[in-house]
Length: 91
Image (cartoon, rainbow, N blue to C red; front, top):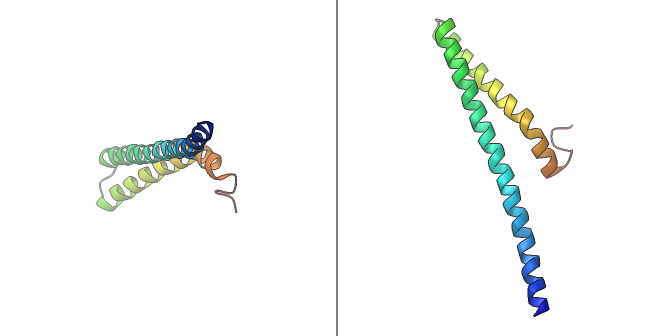
């Protein structure tokens, strides 16, 4: 009886860790998508108000998306370091 409980606890421990890691990745992906969208929308609004040329507007959209992705990466660095150690992002 006691050995069955120990086996169940051993099987549940990795599953809990996997769910916790999956939740972290889901939060990171959600943050990246939201920040990229916010940056793109901000760049698009600025492009519509300030710029006339289509290429300039596309450039503003790209820059806005880049700022959003960079902001998300900065926020998620702590998450990546906690998951993989300090070797991520260092050369």
